[in-house]
Image (cartoon, rainbow, N blue to C red; front, side):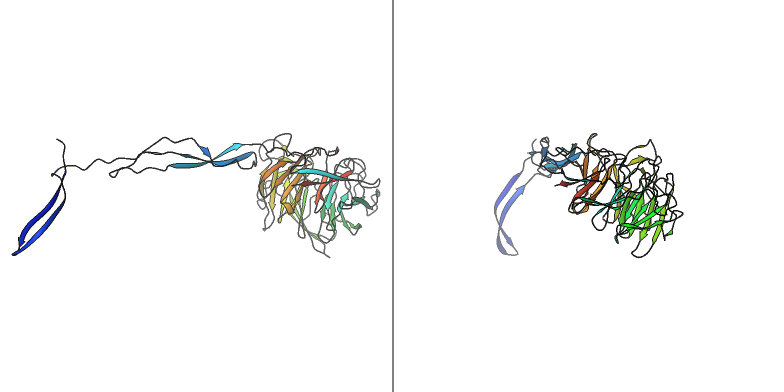
Length: 440
């Protein structure tokens, strides 16, 4: 039997305590034991397809992302206390692999090779210039010393290159001194050069050669101010004895010259600090890690990084080189490292790994890396001189620079630096020095 409900309405006349009253009746009634109507739960349709909310993000490190949304509708609404409906829309973030497309000529990131400066006949390194070192001095000129690779005689020839005026001046003539003459400075293979803010330039000898000459040179105002030193300490210096290393990275932060890595067949992770204040000598400090010194956290062993170290935002950075990992075989480096020297103990960490495809990526020994601090980017050039990459510190993106239409540049062991207002100045193995800009 189906249970029924009904309504009641009307009036009732009654006398209460001798007083007549009219009572209005209105409402519903149900027989005792009847149940209320059943609850109705919400019923939803199936989810629709994922629909993109917008375009893919810019490709960075071979990956890009976007958000997508899908929706559904209510088929049966809830009733009588039934289960409520769930969300009618969902959003997700998806990623996909991508490749940075090299820009076209005339577009963004174009290398403009705008001038060539020839090394004079009596300039440094008229044979293999592969181990020459080029550093930007405070006066805006480029200091260029040595450059013989495996030559038995070291020389003291120095050039100052004015990139803005496109000129080269020999300040110390090409001359080989006998070992008995104080001005002999051994420079076989790569020495290292530290230009200080007061105009002093400290030059360390590289791999010893025969005849073995002096260990250190102090250059200022267009000539050698002092050549000498002993026991690994620069002239007039104090502090830790410095190991002589080949092909290390160099960065100048304030009055501190920082030297990292290097050596020939054996990559090392030694870090030197050589402090020089105007009118004073040199004070040296050594962190000799070789993976064993806990005072230098995260140290990696790199070699042939003489032209791929630089200072940026108060820290030292080193790119590429040859890497000896803690496990596995020796390999071409393709990583940008940061060495934080702001505390009492240095810390080395990975900034970014170059993920450009093979054939587009600058990597390995003797790469050149310079910083364009005003535009927050690193410009790096391959050992052969045919590849230019840019790393953007803001977007963390790597890009291949288009070299279409540039002159033929002889490669093999380039040296370089970045000159504000001029661009990147590169020296190549035939003694030519090119300057170019990477325009945005």
